[in-house]
Image (cartoon, rainbow, N blue to C red; front, side, top):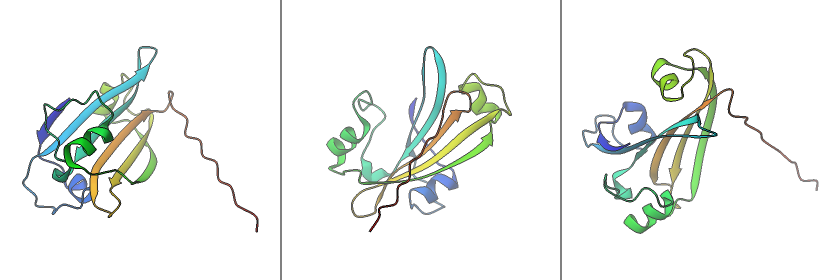
Length: 140
């Protein structure tokens, strides 16, 4: 689903826009999964500088599209992941029971100059996703 919509304050903050911003922002929402089962519900909001439009070809890689439309390259992603119970709307999108655990990932994407491009909320079903991380410490 791609549309123009009024963004909640959390999104405006995530994109570095004034909290009283009245501009409609481009919003893209989609459900992804495998084996016919929904796994993640993703909502992306885009800063106006990304120059995206509702009728753009979102079947191409997203950051290629942004580069094509605005000459902006995504350079940095800042992410936060938290476990939370699935709210009714999110559970419905994920074909999941409300209250069951989900992982919520909040991500902001910036260009090389630190300018915000995208604010993204992702909701992962707890029974369809594993978050793994490897940390290594280099010896001197």
